[in-house]
Image (cartoon, rainbow, N blue to C red; front, side, top):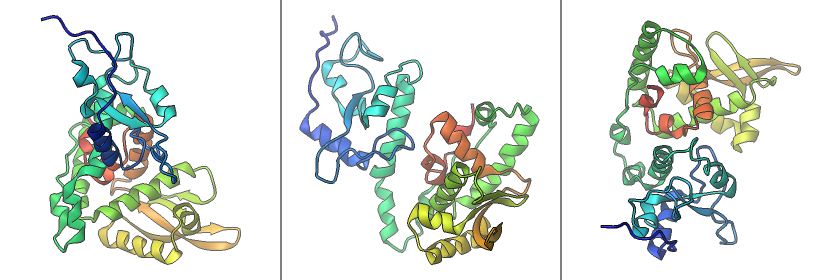
Length: 284
């Protein structure tokens, strides 16, 4: 049977509603905060095809039907900038875009997150995926470590991840957000890297996150309770000022700093680690 002639069909209304609900009103590209609908209710995003609708389009698949091409499984919402960027089919093959779509939509379509409304221990729902070899992390960060070193690092990481599972998701997200801010500001005087971990001034986090100092201090105290961080001080021109510290692993490995850098360079969502605990993404 000959495949049908490729023809552009507009997505159905139900399909568009599904896409928008699963998008969280955000561009699907990792780390992008562009809204898909503005405050006035105008749709400003773009409906993007993973596999093109026309033969000369990016990632065109001749075995698909026209209905397949306009199905929700082949569509994702992105801002104009990232729609153009992902037109590079070599850098963004089908598998990578499907993973990007799945990562993004899972954040907003997991019904188990509703358990947050109850007294059930919802951390039991999180099943961490352990690392095996860390070869992808090694490649992305340019470590050039040997297999034995990577195996030892993976073993240390997996012990840490097992403990991380019991940490409330909002606190794990706070760890990721603090370290992401610290990496962004690492060449400024608001960040200090020491033997025990990475420090960033609470005053900086207050402005960046629009949180009161008391709220930040409370979360830092929670970090201390779980062994993830604490409050210390950074010496400034105005004297010592309070700072949040994200602790390194026992070996001295600045894990969260490396994860943030990995996510930026490999275009992986930080939420895959802070929320989904999917550390197998660090493997090859």
